[in-house]
Length: 123
Image 1 (cartoon, rainbow, N blue to C red):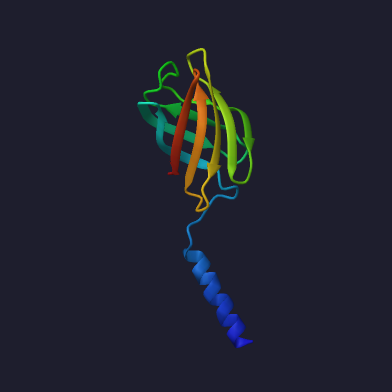
Image 2: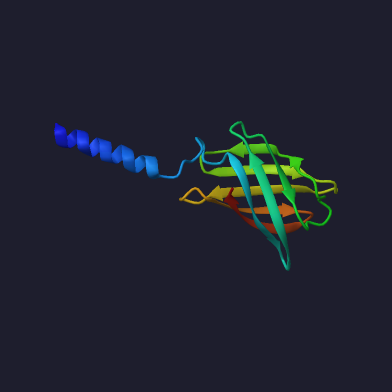
């Protein structure tokens, strides 16, 4: 019994040292590079537990510089689909997947007829 107690105590201590992840794995603030052919910039994504959030891009032609709300959000335990309308006529539509360590959100999207890839890190 004493060994079981000590093993449980050691396991609890080890778990306390593990990084804390959000309950759903996707909530939080993410940022990283996006790529479209020879063009790139930085993407900032913020999402809460209810699937509400916003996205902002640097250097994405016709999208604008301000953060815009997400729409058509479909959120799973490790996947996120969403759309966002910037200042231009196009709609950014993305499909992303959380890596197994929970720290990288990799995705593919489309904006203004061009494919966009992104790789975001949790902040």
